[in-house]
Length: 119
Length: 111
Image 1 (cartoon, helix red, strand yellow):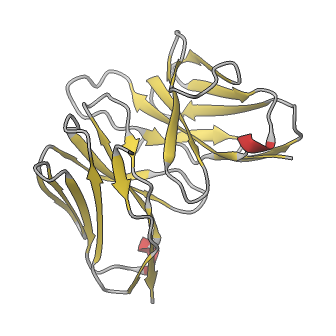
Image 2 (cartoon, rainbow over the protein chains, first blue to last red):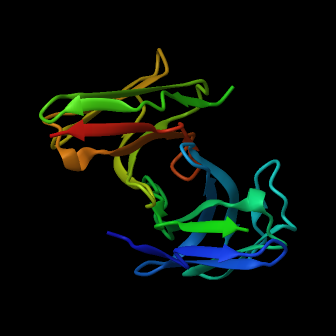
Image 3 (cartoon, rainbow over the protein chains, first blue to last red):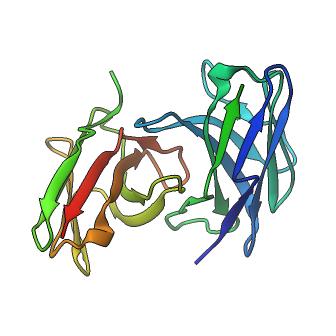
């Protein structure tokens, strides 16, 4: 099956610093990648949809200047949490959809997640 | 109101029992219905997806969709302790659209 990796798997940072999370599709190309946030015992909430070579589309209520998304290649998307605060502490998960599968169900393959703790 | 509602549980069953999970949804435009399994501190993995109404079976897993009542179900037969996880239902309008997730139901299968 298709594999999506995330790095780092966990990170602890001080309030006010910025943190970058990488999402890679290892064995397929992904025109579209998605970033989710999951709080304990809650569901996944879509933050933004990232398309290779274009600006990300953010969901309502998500600050695009705080959560910077870059999708510079067909296998890599990054999420940067700028000026992180304790309330940004969460589990961040990315997913990727393979390119070129028009006409069939387009599965999203999820990464293992990155646990961010802001002190 | 959330577009996909799911009881968070926890649901505890003895090994070998049938696990019954369900969700309801409000958006009649949803066409694709998925069940994901998520182990603690891991990303979700797709178990099954169904297009429109009907049943789908894969090994010990059966997914059912009733669009008339906007009801989604997942049954796990002969449950094993390794089935202990959080199960998330999700729906989307089309094959490329964004996923709307339920809250997830924590399942514990006791030996």
